[in-house]
Image: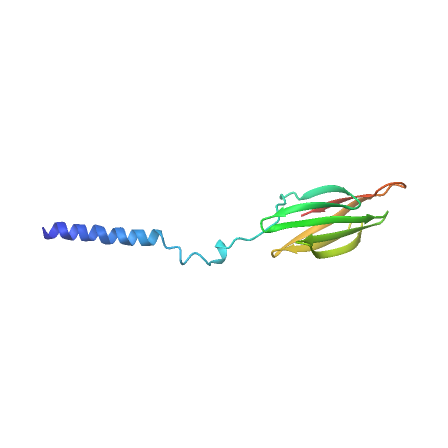
Length: 131
């Protein structure tokens, strides 16, 4: 009888130890490896886009979106504005083959201005790459 009670007690103790060790989430909650890092939904190869003057592109992210606005396009320069939640993050006039950077939740992204096409009549276009 003592052996049966000892065996039952031992099984109960092992079961309790296994249960609590499998469900120990308190020590893992705030470790840096488990924090969610927000980012924009941009593929590894980046986004390439030919944008007309006075147009915008919305880039979705894990914590809101960013809007890239191409304003006036001249033969040598393009006005680019980056907005998030109606707040301007950066606004610059950049020339062809130049870059501008912006931050989103601690991640840095780069916009490359690759090609400007400005006809004599009509809207100009700018080829941008976002990485």
